[in-house]
Image (cartoon, helix red, strand yellow):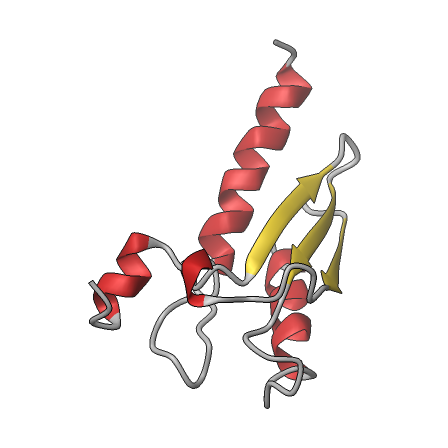
Length: 108
């Protein structure tokens, strides 16, 4: 395994830690545990692309939440650029939530 691969994986973990500091304003759980983050891509140039969804297309934070994710990820020193892509395919459902999120919301 090359050093670059290890660095990219470590950066991916750091990105996830930063994303876990962002909370949905209507649900007291971070957006990662809520299942709103579908994928995080980091290339060898430290450019990041995040594929995420929202709880509904009419989500009140549809304008601000993706920008907050992008800004927080860009604040990581190693990240050269960050882009958030919103998708509703597949649509978000409670099944995407982690066990931790379900426990926090009293769903278990």
